[in-house]
Image (cartoon, rainbow, N blue to C red; front, side, top):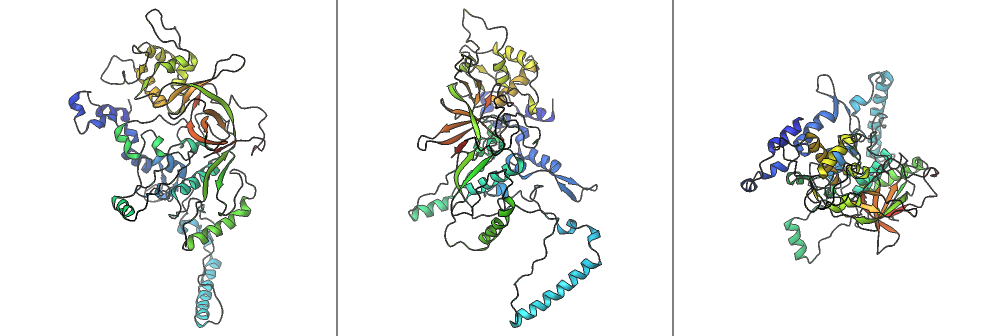
Amino acid sequence: MTRHDEIKAYLEKPKTFSDKQDHDAHLGLIEPQALGANTLVDATTNLFRRSDDGKRIQDRLVDLEVLVSSMFLAFEASEPRDTIYAVLSLAKDTMPRPKSIGRPPWMEDANHTAGKFFKAVFCRVAFIYQYFGSVPVAKELSPPPDPYSVYLDDRIAPDYEKSLTDVCADFMEYCIETSDSLDILCRHWAPMPKRPTKSEKVRLRIEGLKEQTEHRPTWIPSIEGHVYGEPLGVFEGRKNADSLVGCVERRNQQHYGASKGLKPAVMFGKNKEMPPNDQWVGDESNRNSTSGEAEATASQRRGEKQARPRLDKFDGTLHVKGFKLDTISNLSGRVLNGVIPHEAFELGGWPKKSKDSEYPDDVPECIWRTLVADRGPDGTNAPTWYRRACRECLNHTNTNGDLNTNEFKDLALPDTPRTMKLFLERVRGVVWCRKFFLTDGDEEGNRGNYGLAPAGAKENDIICIFFGCSVPVVLRESRKQPGLYQFIGECYVHGKMDGESLHPDIPPHPYTEVQGYTLI
């Protein structure tokens, strides 16, 4: 038993009525690893590489994407934009190196010292000439750029005049470009818009104005879909299942490979008044020629006061290259509070128990692998004993055929097999608040695809494989805007998680012959 398991067992209380009245009864629902205290300990250990004496930071070890979408989700910023801006100085890819350590000592030679002396003299003379108006001289003489400093991408540079949607979309575009992955679409991290205070609501009411709500595209994953929802939700217990894309910290060890590591091809829709930049993310062509213009335009935009509200940079659309895998035809109910409904097993080929029938001796492959998403803890291969543990659990369904995964969770039951506890712990993390689905079979009479879909999935939603995304996703065509799609979320499709559905003749990046999908 790990230290986290010991803490969790200590916090758990006997389930009695009097305990429910206790103000601290919620402690039994807490997952110690999700607490902010645990995050701070991990951060101080894993964020930096320090010198031998521990007094100086030698290097930063974590990317910005990890900090925003994983490590600091336990904390809430009063200003939503600070979810990104507040950690820029901690990330290894966004923190400029101090000039004192940015230039090697051997570069501080006599010529360099003399150069600084003559530059100081020139600045003094220029000031005198400027004072008397003899010659036009620039107001400021900036030092030459330090070749050892890190350039901060304009998309993630702090700008509090940008809308929250633009801030999130810029961050996602940056992450997709730097990671060559679309998994950021499946990680629930985006902060909720700032709620107006009571005084602001009163002022709006007095002025006769309506409260403005910022529209957010479905492809920006809200933190409400995270395991514990918003940061303080950890005190109320699990709300959603674990993300299938796994820990972003292990970028080179993705749990799945539905697109076989293909490079993503996406285009963010942008309003026409913004500087043109219609190239595909991931395409290196023309990037160098436009970066200087974009930087100059952005610096001018930051330096001048806006006479009118700034037009949003993004128009809310995202075009992604990929292909349709299948269509959902049957769905089970949601897995509520860890109770798996009987229709979930029936869709996988497991019969509902009756007085005159017995369960089969073996569990269908698709059922026990789907229950654990075909993986063990931390993305390892599913242990073979999962099949036996699953068969044992199915013997304990209730009279309706439902399986309550919480029934054997209580650690006060010493006779419960440890394998069953470990299996059910994994199952809860995978199926919580998700739906089981089955697609239509093909024309040859083969059975459809079986798997897990988000809670918001509906029948006739389509399952797609996006190039650059490690897991399949669920989309829904808009009724009001045919040809445009809402992004529902990630999904698990048994037997299609490691590139089995990819055609061998896929064109090279940027997949010009592939039509793709436009998300809204």
